[in-house]
Amino acid sequence: MKLRPAVIVHYHEVGLKRGNRPLFLRHLARNLARATSDLGPVQLRQLSGRILLDLDDHPAPETVRDRALRVCGVASAAVAYRVPSNLDAMKAVVGRLVEGRAFASFRISARRAFKTYPMTSVELNRALGAFVLERAPRARVDLRNAELEIHVEVMPAEAFVYVDRLAGPGGLPVGASGTVAALLSGGIDSPVAAWRMMKRGCRVVFIHFHSVPYLPATSQAKARALVERLTAWQYESRLLLVPFGEIQREIVLTVPPPARVVVYRRLMVRIAEALGRERGALALATGESLGQVASQTLENIARINEAATLPILRPLIGMDKLEITEEATRLGTFEISIEPDQDCCTLFTPRHPATRMSSEEVKAAEARLDIPALVARGCAGAAVEVFEFPARARAAVV
Image 1: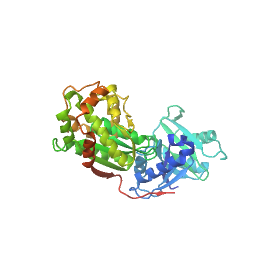
Image 2 (image 1 turned 180 degrees about the horizontal axis):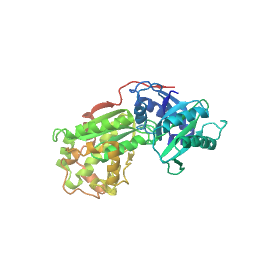
Image 3 (image 1 turned 120 degrees about the vertical axis):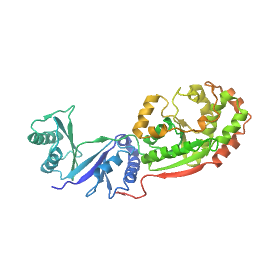
Image 4 (image 1 turned 30 degrees about the horizontal axis):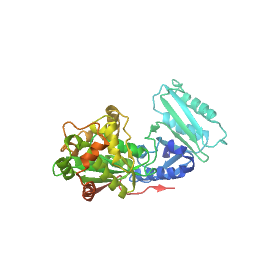
């Protein structure tokens, strides 16, 4: 019997949305189509509680599965094989899947998507389990910690049999929760924060502040590399490169050294907010973690918040550096972030910045600055770059 492969995608949080579920499923299907659009013919079908990627005669089902595992909203994905919904056909595929495998224990996990099927899930488990034991008599059934788990999902017209189900990122599909503008520094934290917003269904616009010509353009190169890596999760990104060196120079001429870091951050927030609003952003996102540096104490965070009219989201606020580094490593951004560079945070930075500024101190520090003019200068100088992943082909959604 010829095996007919497909990728079966399960979602979890999306399935809890009740009245809004169709909207989230449309976003999820659209993102799956985009993520696999350069891999040859892939047809998407929405089934009960799952999405199917039909791959008849596809040369690389595993590659399609791996792409699906990078789509936010996907709880798990596996290469499955389609068969008629009868026991003999299921046994034939199960036999092919266990052939040549070495395993000391196994379990069958059968599920029926419709309850009128003549066999119950327990009966299917027993019948297919007995079939496996005939071919692997030394194996034993283990319902808790099986080395091999064989999944069988019975639909009205067909069944899907698979092993090696892999976990996806979970969360919500990108685009379902609106747009945020993320301040991207080039360090370890901010790319992880941006990804976490993608996982909550947000489309992210990236804003990077640089100090060219006062410093080399290395931070811009890192920002581009980070955005390119993260675009694999949202398929299209915009990076705004904002010249900040002249603004910093003006701050240095008027603001006392201890207050400069907070004033820098407040101006970055104002500029990012203006640029974000132009692109439909409903919030800002940063990689701040409480207590990590001088600008990230509760007092200074409060001062920075006072400069904003949009919400500032801080998805890493309660994480420590080890946790953030581990997530950056999983995302593939860590090695890029640790490349040496000089960004605007290293320019005109005092040796002993204030860690607990009051509102009065901030107002006094900014009193001699023309804040609207500085914000307008930053926005006017912003350069926009567009990133896409993959090439713009389209998979069919039915």
